[in-house]
Amino acid sequence: MDFLVCVADERHEHFAEEIVETIFLAAQQRGTGIARRTPEYVQSKMREGKAIIAVTSAGTFAGFCYIETWEHGRYVANSGLIVKPEFRKHNLARHIKRAAFDLSRSRYPDAKIFGITTSAAVMKINSELGYRPAHFLDLTQDEDFWNGCCSCPNHDILERTSRKMCLCTGMLFDPSEETSSTVAALVHIDIPIPQQP
Image (cartoon, rainbow, N blue to C red; front, side, top):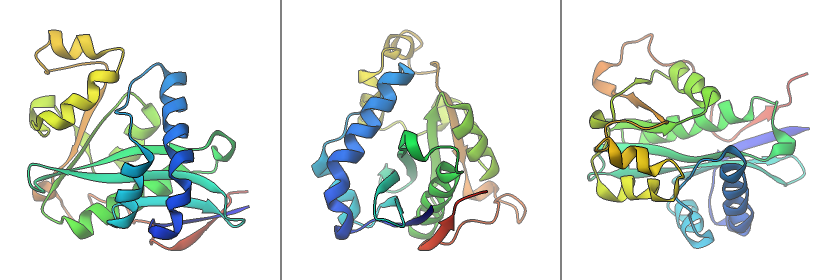
């Protein structure tokens, strides 16, 4: 089985409901919260060219990620990274995340790219891309971003610490700190990803 990782567009809008449900179920299984998005929100990201989708050679949805901007484009977050359970163990999350990072860099070259996660796998991928662990105060302070944490069962920790820490790890890529060796070679968007043997 092969996968195609590409910038999502109107052709992929029919996957929106499945994407939203897959993200929600994964968050429930992990016992973490994620800002619940609507299918319409996901479709808007596709129409704006701010989403990465992975599909199988048969046209089945396999994975997804989207980008959001904060503070007038000063910060970008790669959010909603998901791979359907039956397509895990193929390095697909790494390809999707790298494509989202590449898309973020091309659209917002001066923006700081950040994320918060409890996933060791995502932290590893982020590190490969040049992210570093960061204090929450180094991330966007946009209230809309942090309001997305309200649905997490650990939100009380974030509130008790005045948004200084939680169970998530903050990670940040700052282009002003970039060196020629910082970023690993990125997957080319719209290139089929063959299954690893």
